[in-house]
Image (tube, rainbow over all chains, first blue to last red; front, top):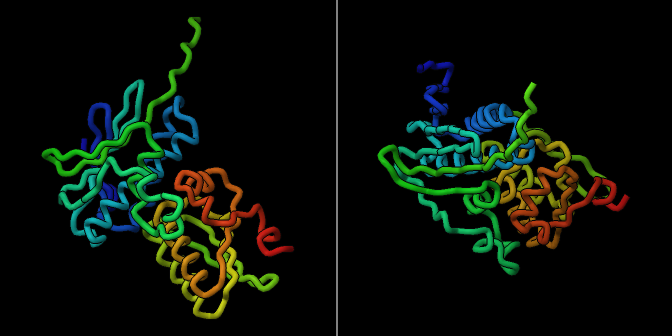
Length: 160
Length: 111
């Protein structure tokens, strides 16, 4: 099913939701709202983990939007999927201009003598610190930043 | 998206109270306000983050830039923040070692 509401195209598919937004900075807050709405529906994700995922996705979307020049000419695609064990969000750069190194860690940027000189480049290292898994791959759809958080296993409810 | 930036003066400090979400869209306004304060001659600036609902790496970068700018003018920038989720971003990035972070504006301004 595909529907369009304002600038956001929402495509539901089995086990997932795909959002397409203009690649403009003003839409990052909308990304946060959408991801938090989906994540809070999971009763096995506590508030802190939801906040971590929302911040991570916001960072990845911001990186992609900045790489696109922030003009909004090229839409940004976000894909949400989930199963019993995890929630996963993909930020897809269809322009293939996102240049990030998934192996970059905060330690590369936040050395003791360098901390006070730090003004940028924290986005992806922060993503790595916030989620359980992050990968950056290239596939047919573009450069894909994939972020996952593992969900707590809840005890089974007793039978009636 | 609304970003509130209100400046008051207290004990010789310029206190910049930030409200709302600081992200890639709104952070440039925070940067402009900090640059303005420095150009007006303020050397001691307190940024009160108690009203901030969200802060990302762009916001962190702006605060670090403000700190550097003030230190280059023999000044300083300190923060007020007690919110766990905002403090967490500073802790993850190691910036708790760069900024003085206080529990209240009174503590940051010495009364």
